[in-house]
Image 1 (cartoon, one colour):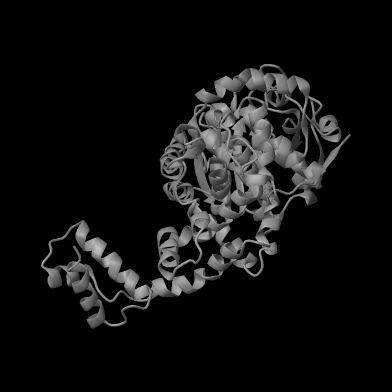
Image 2 (tube, helix red, strand yellow):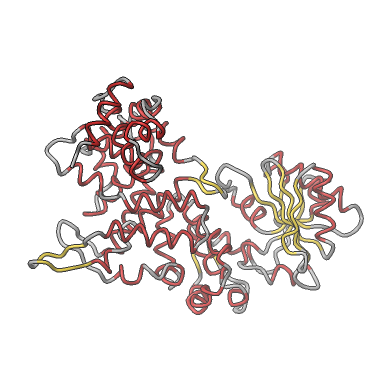
Length: 482
């Protein structure tokens, strides 16, 4: 008999389970199910942040959830009142409580997605005795010992095709291996993934992107026929060849760029002396629980998304005219289709739109102060993200390590180093405002005023004007231009 020990949980998790046991009283025996049992058995701790606990009860889940929320002073969310699913959110823990999906606990567990998640422990026994036997009707513990990921039955994935995508994520996250039968079942249900709600697909994709080796999961999803259902735009990328110095077709190059982003984000400390600053930046929230890191990985996958449709042969040379501009439109459309937070969509769009900028700057004999200023001005708070994307993109051209490319990426290091200096320049109060421009030149409000302000602000940042009088004189010279 395998025992689950309370000591394998965090203090916050234990406090929540004690509240569950107290709120349930003698009205049923709630059980801890799923990932928490699996992860504790594996001694696998999820990434820092709020952990998830899943509890199941024979019936009355919503009522129990309300009582637990009241005891803990947490937020109560009725996720699915018709099916009996509620959520409690407290600092450090998110608790979901559901009614059994069958007449018995064994039936409930057999209806779950994978055997390694079809594990249960009595909450009351666990919190009173400090340990409790693990209920395992589908052989999940044996599968964990054998590092297998297996669906309990052939209909489980068909009942909810999102489970196919979750299987890919769990395989990568837990270093398990999908069984041949489960692989066949995933391939069979892959087309049905298109009918799953966008929000559920988005959350699973974001969880995949948050993995340290997200590319492994995306390659597996592609091999199983899932990626093209989620992102139909990758299909034309697959067959689009690229000229030298590229060694790979567009999709393979993009997956390698994504792998480069994985590697860079995992080894930011190696990007001396910027590692600590970059880590704080990439962990910045963009809304809806999304941080910059996963968006960078998605941008790496999509940065060349428009190459297939912009491919032209001119004078015997293959060109991809304006694939950055068209790609930005496609990236925005994808982000909106996935219902990503608007700020995350904006970052994704800007990274794809400007991904060629560092290469263009590097192709010149000298980066002028004006070109440098305009680079920072256009990218603003997304500057560091773009430079990391440029590093991953450059490495993916030949399949090199981005950390090796870093040693020779003088321009990227220089632009990263100038970011703080540019922030100080941007923080300086503007010498002129819109009303100054309109009064000086007799203009009405409109785009022309904004354009002139941008020119004056650039002159100020470059040190060409330093006083209000100089700014007004510069404004006069601009108005005299043909």
